[in-house]
Image: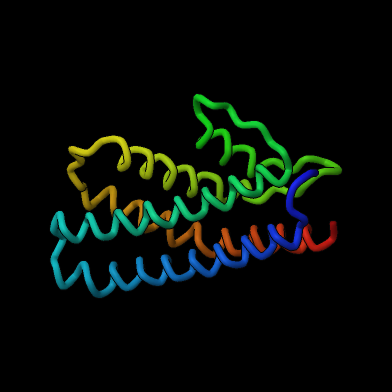
Length: 158
């Protein structure tokens, strides 16, 4: 493993976890207060969708740094999916999984939505889909914190 030592990666994970907590808090506030005030309108959906997109983007950026630290090469054609899949793998003698199998499906849904939202600009917001993603994000966030907490403990043992 070349590049930064594990203390740099731990610091980055801690910083991004704090950001993820803020985004998750903003999402909760938007769902519980802002969206009801606006009604189930397209503007409210855009706001909630943006927070979900930001959440996954922050998480993916952190995963990319983990991948780089452990010198993983990613498939250039589908690196976003490849990255998430690699984060679920424990590499014996090298690293612990950064994403639990129990959380993979939740994060995969957030990844697919983020990809769709970024590349299809004529998006009609479907509140049933938004509600589904809110549910996935609510389930995913505590698991992300648990998974990365275990991963940081592993990094400290290096």
